[in-house]
Image (cartoon, rainbow, N blue to C red; front, side):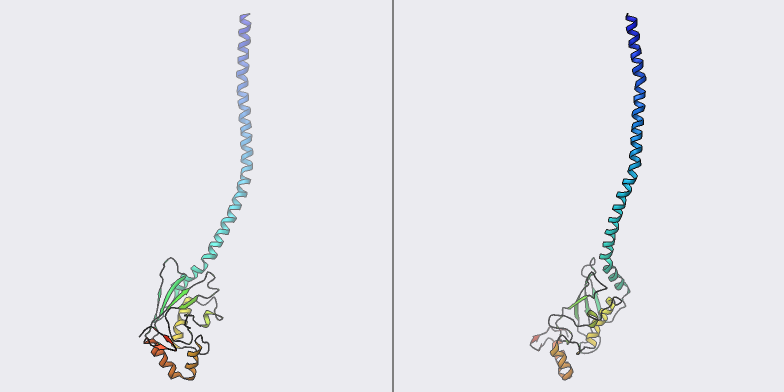
Length: 222
């Protein structure tokens, strides 16, 4: 009886031992199948996600490119600009080329020798829109008003994207070499320039020497 129980116990252990590898094999096979299924599904899922991120990155890159286009154009204009006698560019913040200052010192004409400072503010839409220019130096001039606004054709309706910052600076110099009474901001000065040129010239000289002209006190520039 004891031998029978021992044999039954041994047989049960043997069956248990035999069943264990099978279960392990089944589990391995199942895991393998699961892995294959996951591996089969994952690439499609990863690919889809990857495409979404690629589109987002492309979109972000496009926005950055659009934002930086004006800065790149300004860098190009600066690097290719020919030296214009009597002009000097100052960039207060070297990391921001979109705002800078220009000194214009006419080399001839009524305003010769005086230095006029301008602020130049470049919009993000440059070169499709012109820079905004403001004269910081009070001046008696038919094309510059008391607030420093400048009347220059290429800063308004005659601006084209092919024009550059060099064109703007040259235009500012031209205003002092050849003031234009036909497109004035200071209409009184323009009228005087046409009707009484000698009196206009005297007013310019008095203003540059720090005198009072047309009810306004000007800084001494000469």
